[in-house]
Image (cartoon, rainbow, N blue to C red):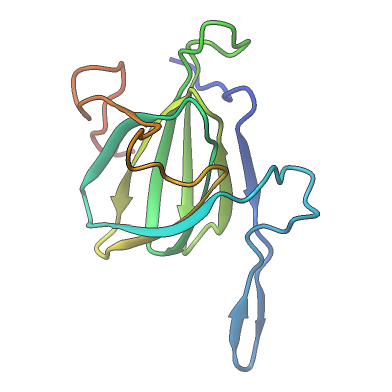
Length: 154
């Protein structure tokens, strides 16, 4: 299967500014062309080798950035009207590749933590979580969507 980019998804390499005190990188600004609106910010973690998948939203877009560790994030586009319907996009991000990844609403997504340390993920979403009416659909991580989470050695 040839990987294709998911329509309306964004993968933005972040610029790291190191100095004698440490480092800084901007994740998102309200004057960025891809900024929509702020709904909520939260941090989630994933232990090494764990797969957190699959889920999608109908009302919100997710803006993911790994604060510590490494992830392989996967998006699968099965949106009926999408020009990239059927696309599977893999993105590596984290300590060695600081990035912002925007997952558009309606796209199945999930990830696995790579390496030997917990991945810490910042998620900035366009809508706040509604406990009474969650905007979330879930599928099992294995055997439902056409994706194999097994590590591929070269």
